[in-house]
Amino acid sequence: MSSFDDFMHEKLDLSKVQDRGSKKWVAMMLPEHLKLIRQYNDDSKKIPKPELNEWDLEAIQESIELAMKRNVEVKLKIWKAGEFTIYVGKVIWVDLNRRVIEMEDTFQSFSLRLDEIVDITVLE
View 1 (tube, rainbow, N blue to C red):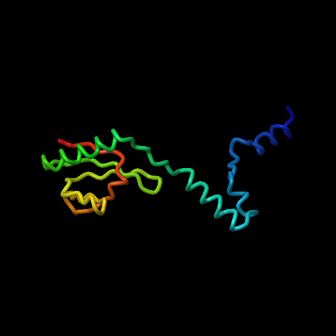
View 2 (cartoon, rainbow, N blue to C red):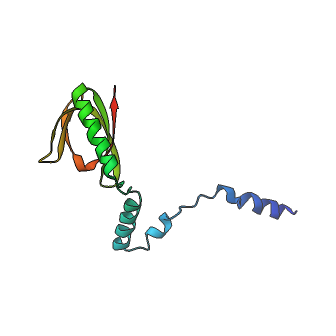
């Protein structure tokens, strides 16, 4: 190779090129498009609510009753707005009229909706 080819090869080393990805196209989009794209990305990260059958609901009810009788902590898995959240604490009482479960941990007391519970584990 000639010295010019060596020079061009050194100057045009494509391994050092950093592509901006989708950022380079943002300037050509309308704000409405950007909003829809962001909303789509947020929605695609959401997890659908698991469908619980009668057996699952009965198992959750039995675990809550057991935890209340033994006064032990439980780990609740809650589904809300496409995301799972884990809560750990003791079950204080259940209000079936309001469909709410009252719990407390070492720092605070809180209430959760019964319809949002997808799993429960009794911690002994």
